[in-house]
Length: 115
Length: 114
Image (tube, rainbow over all chains, first blue to last red; front, side, top):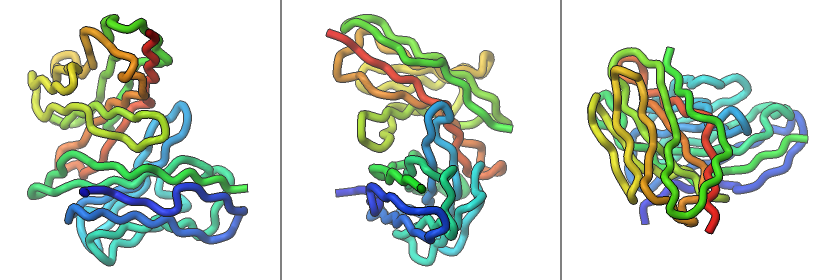
C-alpha cells in the first residue's frame, strides 16, 4: 500500500530535549516536505526537499533541521524544542516532473507537546 | 508573494444543502491550485486540483474552477452529506522558477447535520 508514515504519532517532551520525528514514504517520490498545523493559521511549510541531499527552507524553518540522506526518509529534527513548537506536524511527499511537483500525499500527523 | 485566503468557518449545513467555500489567492504567474480535505484525526487528502486558468477540478461531487480574472478557486457541492463533515483547505503551489513551495489557507470546518 502506498503511504507516508510518521513516528511517533504523539510525543510529549520538555524544553531543550532534542527530538527527531521520522517520515518515510514507499512511493519513490523525489519531493518531501514538512508542515506544522496550528489553529487559525492552517498549514505552514517548514522545510522541503526536491531530492536526496537537496533541502530548502519553507515559511517557518526557525528551530528546525532536516536531512535527506535517502530518498524514502526525511526526518525532522528539533535540536532544542521550545513550547512555541507545540503543534501538529505533517510530512508529505510528491512525485516530480522535471522542475515541477505533483500532488502531495500526507502522513497521518505527529502531535507534539513541549512543556 | 504567494498567499491563499479562504472563508472563515465554521460552516454548518443541513444535509442536501448547497455548499460554497470561498478561496482567493495571490501569486506570481500561473500557480496550480488545490483543495484538500482533512477528516477528524487524519492527514490531508487531495480532493481536487486545477493547473491552469479556466480548468475545472472535480471529485466526489465537489467542483472548483480556476478563475484567473478574479484570482479565485471556490469550492462547491450541490448537495452535501453528513460524511462530508471535515476541514477543507485551499492551497497553491508556486510555479517552478519561484520554488516548489506550497501555501495553504487557514482551513474551513464544515459540519453537515442530518
